[in-house]
Figure 1 (cartoon, rainbow, N blue to C red):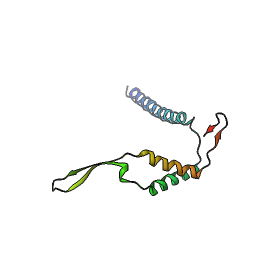
Figure 2: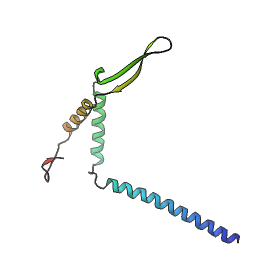
Figure 3: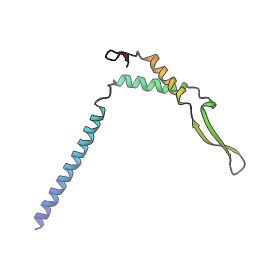
Figure 4: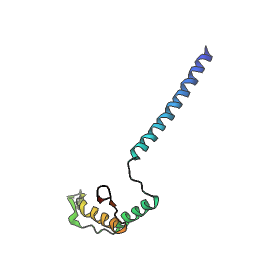
Length: 116
């Protein structure tokens, strides 16, 4: 009887390992499926984009008018900034896209005659 129990436990353990492996394979295939229609980008291009975006953000001159802020008075009567929210996403995204456009040539899509 103990041999049957041990065999069943071994079978269950083997099946659990198989299920775990199949779940990992499923996640891998789901990721591949998500990526199938994404345009390909080389590692070099990705690194260039990372540098361009990083440099653009580092060089961007943030202005006080691009933020909403609230002040409060703390417990020892000192004025403190209690909330700061960046609001001018358009200018920042415009600066990033301009830097990318200055670095890369934008190709025309022949099928729709639009930029790609």
